[in-house]
Image 1 (cartoon, rainbow, N blue to C red):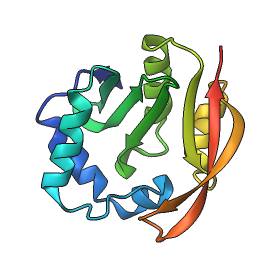
Image 2: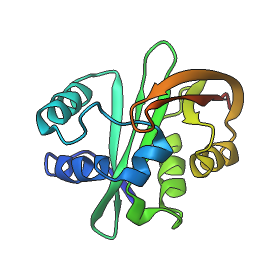
Image 3: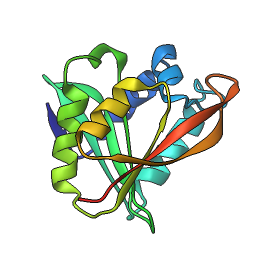
Length: 154
């Protein structure tokens, strides 16, 4: 696993990852129309052109496995997305470790839907602690879900 700068060609893989139903359910995230490439491209253009965002591609054996980023605002927040093809292989764990070594500003927050046990485990094992919960509407689930709010201070 390696983290690297995002290349324009990575966006095709990121778009394909966004189409994975199981990943959308676990993240509880889904664009209103996940197959709308124009909306996806606009969203990623905003991310890549925002100087307050640090974003990396997660690559495994030459293949784009996902992305990881932090919105470095008043309360920096980490987000990551890994294709279902790479789940259960330690790739996300390695990516988070490498990213936390690069982005050292604390506190760092994360939001994870309460039944996304894989992501919760990755973050909690890295020292993130629960500091609250929030109710959000999930397009992927067409329902209100509970997100665990986590924070890393060390």
